[in-house]
Length: 173
Image 1 (tube, helix red, strand yellow):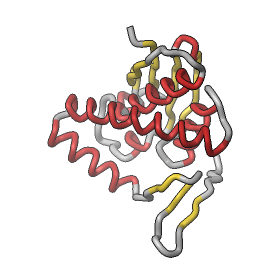
Image 2 (cartoon, rainbow, N blue to C red):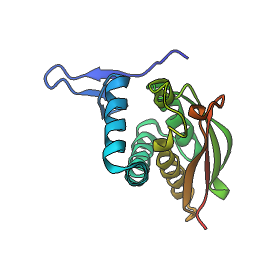
Image 3 (cartoon, one colour):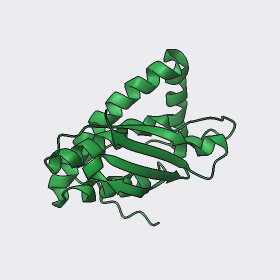
């Protein structure tokens, strides 16, 4: 996949934007080292909860902005989100299943940046993405006039020796 991201760098401020959203560009090791340090300081469970809430809010905001920027609606926004995540080096994301009417999706992730950056670490390493997918699904449901809320979790990870990571999005009970 060749990235075709519209990147603009403001000559006066140095601010990078893509699709009218301000961006930061950092090396993978920089992000991962910070991620691991925070996880160690807070403990995995506490950090995962913080990441889930923050990722949920950020994905919802991103979907709202991108829908307006590109004139997209519904599931097309979530598909665009997965495409942009893939183009930005997080890994290759794709839907295996997507059914917004049931707040359900199964997302596969190959070449996760978190797995690639931690070759000696094992287990579910990609949990930080979970909130992103629930936030995107809730945006899709709001856009479609459905009040259904969702949750998401990593059910398999390449860090466990699997071929790829899998995330399940489902309706909140």
